[in-house]
Image 1 (tube, one colour):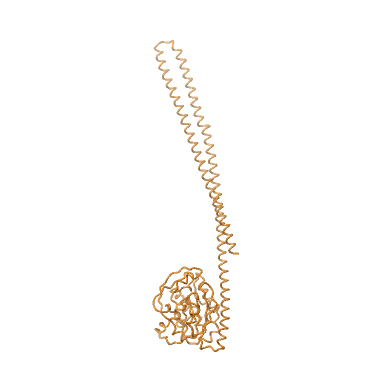
Image 2: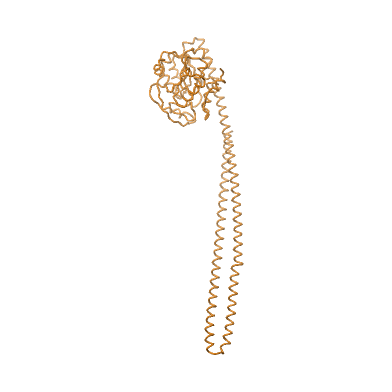
Length: 439
């Protein structure tokens, strides 16, 4: 079955690229099960997949090698669920046994540090996070651990030949192989991923001292390499030379593939970044348009307030020209009438002086009454003038308040214009920075 056929047979997560990377690396690039290893992998033996993840290598090994059984070790709960689903989907129930336990150099419990953005990056080493450039966030999941030798003995598999052992455990390779020395003694081929930032190459060679080991050139922050190992007793001088030559070529092919895959991933990431920048620019333009609309609205509101002020001024003028002046004119007219009436009374009094003394007394009293009435009218006129003055002062105060409100609105418009200018400068700087980054 071709790699393309296999690639479509896996259930993977869609919330990140980690599962796709594993499928691409194991199926498309075939980083572990190289053709030059197949002649050294006996049929009908056990295949151990240590760090099985979602089961991609387990399915590939079961499909291509037809072993007696594949033992797939995966301690992380979610990965283990996907492992079970992929075993069932590919009809390998019974041929592939999923085992929910971690392997180590001794038995017990250990915290498994879960990498949030990479389901294939879970590690029993918290220090792994400090070595990665992405600084991923970790959570912990306590898992049961045992040694490979102890687990095989407990399952009565302590004497079974092992055709192939694959290991990819994010830095725990040294501890696991140390706990599986008896298993290694009956293993023909070992393949895996070595994280040299955590497990040095000489340490691996010491643990696989009965094997001819080829380790590829490291890449990435963890100095990650692929390694292939064949039991040395299986290799004659010609086979040894051929293995080294083919492993060297395979190593170069893998390095080239990693570069191409990383370049493609970088291209996709760049396109995503450009898309984000385009959306950000569109958002800023929308903000600018909204700001312009708001300024236009404020200007319209200001014009409305100015019109309202003009109407108020006209109303005050009308009050001054009509109401106040009319009241004063009415009072003056009333005063003139009263003065005329007073003059008439005085004339009448003069004419009456020659009359009887009794009539003179009455006239004097009447004159005094009229004089008081005139005084009351003059007081009323003075009161009306004072009331008119107070009304006019109130109108002037209302006018000043309206002018203050308009001044405050003008200040808000001025501040908003300054804020908009600042935003435009920030956007220009942001776009310039992004343009520099792209270059």
